[in-house]
Image (cartoon, rainbow, N blue to C red; front, side, top):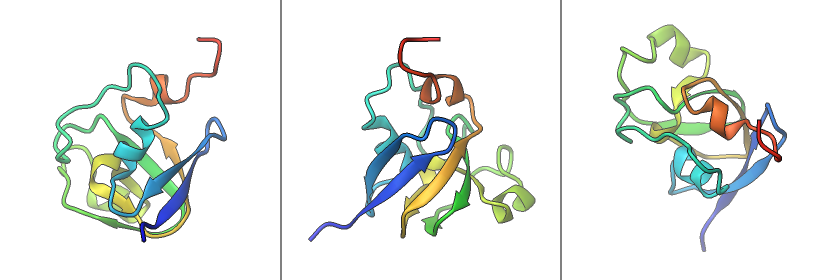
Length: 107
């Protein structure tokens, strides 16, 4: 049986379900937001950077050009390289922030 976790986007309060086998970015795309810029999907472009403030996760290697060791220790990661292992809360800090965090009605 598939396991889902609830992911909350701090800026908007929106939540989405993310399968444990999917990355946070894949789950975010399921929100149906138009114009989410997606780069390489392999941890090398920095477009999908998030700051995880609560919850647990597994992560894969990502470019030090976009995420320093110190940032990684503080929970700043590339959402294309992170899978949830519990419910979690994140803030969007990468280039996709404008589109992910836009309120309904357009801004």
